[in-house]
Length: 354
Image 1 (cartoon, helix red, strand yellow):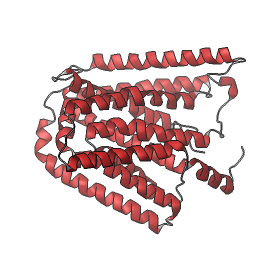
Image 2 (cartoon, one colour):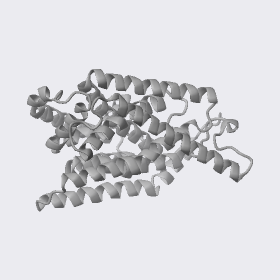
Image 3 (cartoon, helix red, strand yellow):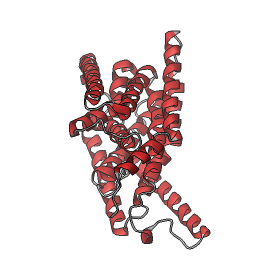
Image 4 (spheres, one colour):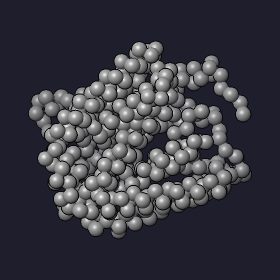
């Protein structure tokens, strides 16, 4: 198997670090943070109903297709036997998560929050490695801290800066199974906020200072700037809007840059290519079949999860109930997305970096 020299690695980083999707992601979050920061300064508040609509549009219409694409790109040239094992373990993980939520909804909520942070953190670290590089992250501890800081911004920062909304929708999520199950923890919420805020601030500061001490350089500067941008974004932008737009405008956009940086590193056998064909019409037909099968599979899992929950929309109106249900559902499918699609698939994985 051919090796990649240091010169080609640097050339790849130098080229992909300028990928348009990286600048788009940074500009999007910066504009949103500044806009909502200014609105907050003058006392303008975005109606909660509008925030919920933005969340659903961002998470369903804009971001969901990219999750399917990550799996498709990963499985495209893999052997059929691997694909079947992949799907079987994926469905088993979904079943396990649903079972946990039904038996212990508060624990299920905790796992859902962890999944969101892991997706943003680990996926973000892989993008950094494929584009700007991670020369300043010289130990496993530093890499773990980098993933924690990037992923923690997604859920931990909103707990500190948007506690009412965060707690309200967390209660709705738990209420899909057991309404009121989170009420016994309400008394310690303020203390939890203080601990989380202090811990995250310490982690962010340590991550930046340690990266500088271990070499600094351009990769550190990019990492530090993006880590601070994420923290500011989730502090200034209302949590529903922030999460709803983070995944399409930041996570998915940046995975495009990662894919572009490794597309010259094919893995797998062309014989098993799902889109393989002797002519363009065959390729188009296969692509259509893949899209239809993926859409039907997603709908099937969605329907099964909806049926499994006693109160799939909670005890609230349609819009907040839809936000709560989708938040739980996307976490349920994201757990195997991370574990099966990356952590257990060390040969390639959805966040592949050679």
